[in-house]
Length: 443
Image (cartoon, rainbow, N blue to C red; front, top):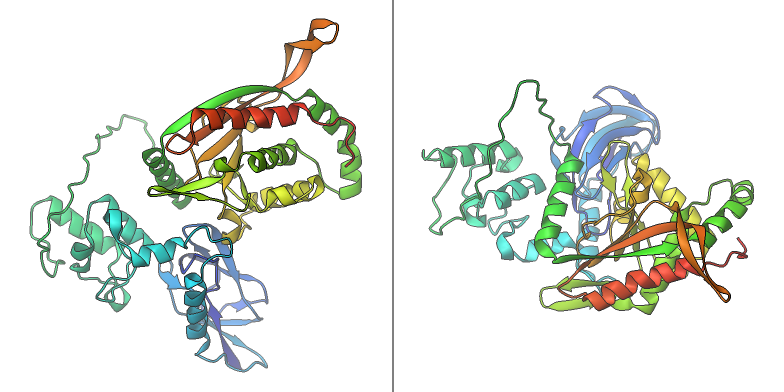
């Protein structure tokens, strides 16, 4: 019987670690090739890790809630007829990860978030690796930043985890003892610098019959992301109403043929994405990001597609280079991403790198919305429900009233870099493209 290592795989260009959330197999349990062994979570997405071969789980090296670096062995699997995996495999993967993170992206637009965190501690950010060599997990760094714990103060806390790593409990105990005014036994040395006082939060009183529900991990990430976006960008929203009757009539005409030919449905989403991509080509300054006092103009048009999950949470898979795809390609990719999003099958790379986001509030019967910008983008468009309404129709023979399919479009944009002229013109241009939809178009 030979042994192989189950390695933490590379989860994306900017993902260097993951947290084990649940073991699906126990030591001594048999596992088939490609069968899921454990569930992991990164700050991007949750996913499963399958076994590379059939065998028996001989040893589990990390427990649930522990953070594992990309390239590290997670477990030992005993297999038949295979040579032992060399121990050098993990460091090699680690070296490859570092090399990739240092290399600039081909489009020259943004640096990996983890690399940025390692090289700068400005704005109160806690470094992943301290000058003393201590490693701090994403959860510990997040709590420390929220509670105003400085880098040097965090380094002074004695850790109870593996390799003296500071755990969540270590940090919470330190914060509790600090807040009560007692001396903190876990603190090795009191820093000289003055720490920021946490902003007091309003107390929430419980009443008889109230139920307390703990946020899940994804809801916490969404919460932080939304609050950070409102704190970062000066949000402004512009609205237009579009007559999309031609688009509705065309889809009704071709949907059965499309389903029969392609084996899947054609929805309004790819039609809207196509219009947005065309408008961005004409007005590229809506496809930018802000870095301090500089503006990064994106070369690629990568459209985020906000998708509701069965849990009620939201995830945003990305249609890359949407302007380079025809309608058939957009339709298939939209359906594929949406289906895999709902089944938690997206990879980390598929939910990052977006340059502009579209959210369909019409899915929930809403006619319009004021969405929050998906940082570091500067604009997000919401499309409302399509409703039949009486409308004025202009003809060469005079105006008349008719029943039309109408839809509201709303664009939230960052007023730091997008003025009302550009924001209003952009959403109006998307409406014009949809209104001029070719009713005789081939599929």
